[in-house]
Length: 257
Image (cartoon, rainbow, N blue to C red; front, side, top):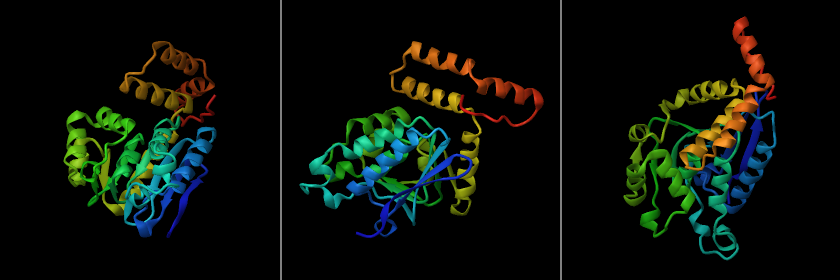
């Protein structure tokens, strides 16, 4: 089993990066990788200094999805916990901080949903996507189907799931799967530009609006909860700092309070 577990790092600006680290096997996800991802997500969920998460992979492919060779083994993710992959992706989607998928290469199988659970996706020219579930005899898990439908629309979801066709980068951009598609040489610059813009926002406002938008998209919105987030931001030191910075024509220095 080559490669290692996903690695978490964080820079001085609060931009955290999780890197999938099995390039020899196209960053396929083993049970221990999923557990490591869950641990990283839990750490970030409780870290107020983390402003943005970037999820990426080593090598020429972002991720080949779950290690299909483990399917059916009694002590693997499928045998001991059939919902481990689903739960891992759901935890990524539920993170309070904004998330960016830095797609250094193609995405296959469950990795397509892992990236879709992020708030933004930046890919590279020449990458492709394939969701082969129908051609493997698999019925995909419910939350993944929901993400495809709510984020891409029913028509796109049916095309990607039922046809199991390979879709190139330009079509992924047209479908809305990718937010941007850039040459590989400029991927880091594009991701940094987006991450810096997200990290520059007031944490209370960014996290609150992310949660509210996701709830509205999923038909789970509660007006009282949204109003509570609105009031919290209205009474925050961040809002006072933002207004002062605007008046003084300087960048704001948000504290998350």
